[in-house]
Length: 293
Image (cartoon, rainbow, N blue to C red):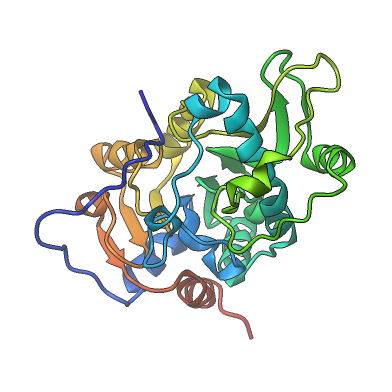
């Protein structure tokens, strides 16, 4: 089953009522035990765009698929050339007010854990514990032959050494950490292989068309089972990898709250739908749940 399809989702039917008020979400979070499911919309205020928002990159950019990456050396060359530039932007990105609010709510015990569809590591950078990287993390690299994992910084150093004349410039970053480059800029890029076995290196992320590891999915289902409510932050829930947890919560009678700009594929399962920018909404949520002074 393709858990991250490249096809976009178009909402149908009449939109469900949405609000800018946080009262119902505040009450859910005050009770504690809330599980957060976050998507790319949470990181846009850190300078990392989403795929499907008003300016989402799926409107202009087709992400690398797993089949293309493993089946073509030229596909891998194109990916790594683009990602070599994009990684620098991801690595410099800083947590925003939304990430920091989630971290604080986690520290206070109101949030039981976080499942993130993002691969940027910004939840962890904000100090949040109990994070499951559903789609992996760009800060790790894995060998498809021997399974060795290594830090992305190590690969970055090796790629810089192998491509001393690479002078391409990134015009815009995409959510999975690559950029758009012309073919002539990609053509001369030199790949490096696993330092241990010479195998193919891949970022330790779930590509479009690739399955999320089963053990990771089961861990997330357990987190859903044990939570008091599910709070979706900044995800259109277009792909099944995230939507299935919303459906599982709703089926179990666990309240689902969604804060997102625009409609989502999970709206029909939600008890409350809040349409607001995430940084602003989560800053207010934290202030109302844990007022200071």
